[in-house]
Length: 301
Image (cartoon, rainbow, N blue to C red; front, top):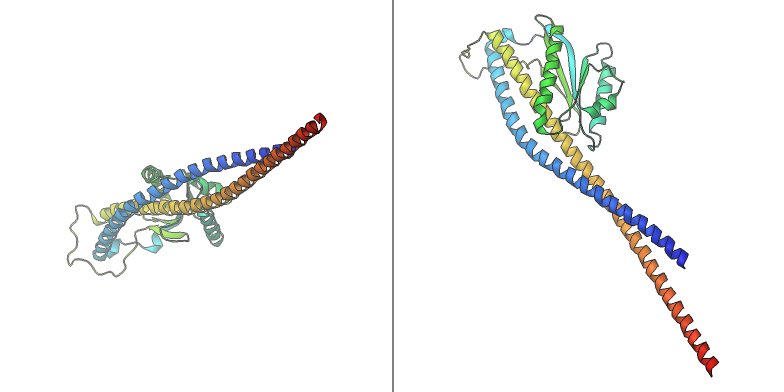
């Protein structure tokens, strides 16, 4: 009995330590979940503002190009394309990076004869791709909204360094592979050149009054458009990442709670077995004591 009781206590001690570990992990995951939840609320405000900014720039570009169609984008002038893929800097976000990596591999196979320069944002995505694809440059990605601007500045500097490849009259074509808010699949968005509205009807009858020459104005407008578009893309990617992280955390925490419940039931069962064994020992000891007393009484008579 004593040996069995000792083994039960040892196993119960192991389960108790496991439960304590699960509780510690649950506390950490709960804190990470709360951080992601707060980040989604903040990004929601940022995205709403960014959508309005982007819509204003697009409306201005459409009106300008409607009056100056000769300045619009001409496909023949396009330089070889550049792909920017935005992954995550941190983990615990499900298949966020894996789905991006699969999309890039598929695109790479389809365009093997005319490969693009590939810029990777996010340590986790870069690790997923490894040496599979010809990566031109990698950048650490943002973990929170406040980190978007410095990351984006480094990316814009890299795009500026690639601009000479377009030639004197050429235009860089930049496509972004990234997750977007509210979408379950990877989105491919053309960032540069500024979309040409084609035969769009001017918003105003008169041509806009400019303080710059029309080509210079369009160049500056394209730069602002790229800056606004990239902010929108990064904020949207961060929103999708944090939503995936919330889903991943909720699933993991639910499974962990189920495991903890099972361990708690095992712990209680072992404790009940120990109590039963202790009662049996007490009862047997009491019976032995009664027999001993009876024996001594019989001997005395």
